[in-house]
Length: 346
Image (cartoon, rainbow, N blue to C red; front, side, top):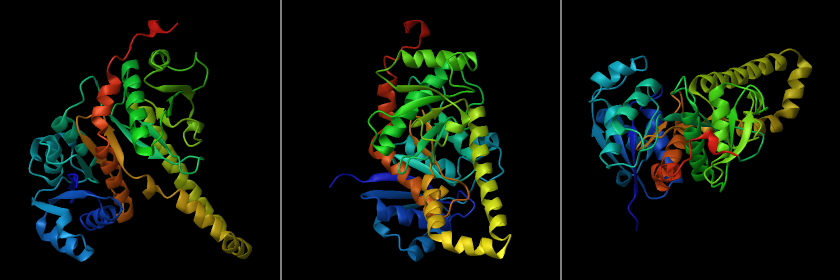
């Protein structure tokens, strides 16, 4: 039998840790074959939970530490003083080769800073980017968007690298041979947008063997499924992500108000319940949990801090899939012989 895929877990990171984390690992172990988990955190809490949740003893090992990175801790302080924390030790296991990937639901800024410092970047990558899945109109085919906040400002080279990394990420995660990539812009016309976006478009057109570039996409295309991968700078990407999340909450609250507005509305709600439950399942954010820091010399997956066990299990599943398909090496290969001069486009 092949060696198991080893995943390190920051068992103390997240709003619902360690219980939701351990239960999520248990759910992931049931869906993923031949996986072994390194659980970093307070053994006095983790061990009883692992037994209570029914996690097989042959599937995990606990590394005890008393220190935890707090949700409001500054990344600089976390890096400086958190070397004995569950988060740092889980990341460090990837650096030493003891594990293939790390998952944490803890402080995002600290996790990103620690991952970058501990793992470093892949040769040829200027900056790592935060990528996440988003639902679209295409059933069973979400898209991937990056960067979602790691880099507030980006040049054309950064956007091109993000495009290639996002394409590899999508191909491995969703088994799509040639995913399409779009650059987020204020219009679809070639003359629209900032200079770095237009320059990145020219470079991508000159690298058709590396990426299936489909042109500019606009904000209303994010959930349309127009492209499989959407690329932007971290500032625009983070604003777009939070706008989508805020709009989703608005619709949810307005719907609740409408349902409770009259007796007839309540009757209509009951009649529409089967369709609404189907819609809820398709849009369940837990099914898209697991953001990836692409471009690092190791697989680092960020779970939503408030994720429950099911959501956490999906983040673990992302880490396992990417580790199994050697994401970092494939990104390294795709970045070789990249043509970065717009003048090469005829």
